[in-house]
Image (cartoon, rainbow, N blue to C red; front, side, top):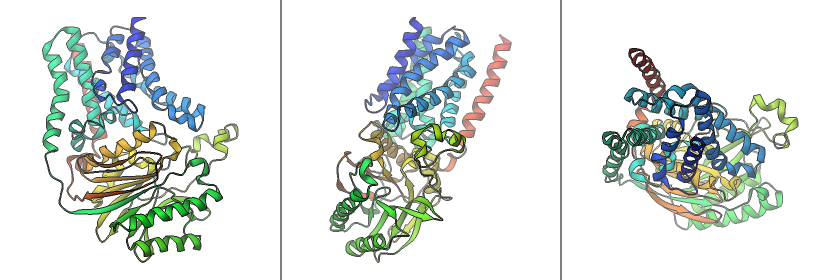
Length: 484
């Protein structure tokens, strides 16, 4: 049973590495017990050990999904564990091999990077549990993501665990030192990078954090009172004379393009504040709702809009595969299918250009990279995190803003209903962090940037790099084993 306890220990170390605990140093050796547990085991025991480790982790990590439905929590955890189990089955010869080899070690690390690539693609993509995200409170090592993205940081963390394991097992100091280098190298790089100064060109922004419970947000009575409170917050922000005021996702819950009363209210906000506003609202297109942001100019007119492209499965639409099951699952029966946008949008206004995202989209580094490549000088995400109802998911979501900022060397603004609303500078430093479940006007002066990072330039090729590197290394292990 010792091997089972070791698997559980790795699972608990992973849990403690992420929000709400945030003991981020634990991630660097979290897999050491798991590696001990799978040594010289059968393939079935290797897979079972990995399942135990990650099942513990994901059951806790996605426990907040129970606020929607308990079976949604179970489905999400088992889906993520299933992918991990398939990975473990495929690489079990590498996991259980009791003889050290640099080629096998690199092959296993590359395979883990490939697993994270898989987590980020497809209809059910969910990259929140990527190892690199555990480091959000430790800015020096986060800086390495400006070169290789979050997956690259995960690669280093996983490699560190492997090297520490082999150093302990074989009593080799050079392997222990190599494991420490996985941490030291990004730390030194990041420490130097943090000494850089952002550009002097800045703009003033106001983030409007509302605090409307999801259970009341869509009722007609609550809608009227929320508009009154929203009006007060916007006028309060206007007195600070910001260059841009940003509202949360669906702050205006009606169909702005169909409701003259709402149009008049939004125009009044612009005229009274004499500034540009990013308004989260619904738009109606051929009878289907669109989750949208519109940029309203100081004269009260809007010519630029963004319609959310990456919709949340089971939140904003039912994936086609699950349609036959709707009649058996009450939550799915009442779900409205939103119309997805077709293009990511960079808004233009006199003070600069900024990339726009809505809620879940900030989880994906490739979206921010695309917006930066199209000329965005800073990035925003407008969100409605009232769904999370005070769970660690609020912190998980907001922490990703730090990585998007560093990866692209762009200031990043997150504004949300119930929060967390925050402003992050291009090096991941927190300018302001508004605690959740509060109603506030969050003022932030942010620097603008125009250059591209290494990640911006090569990020689109990195998934192929991990996959190609893994295939090459697997081939080398086969050749190496045949020689033996």
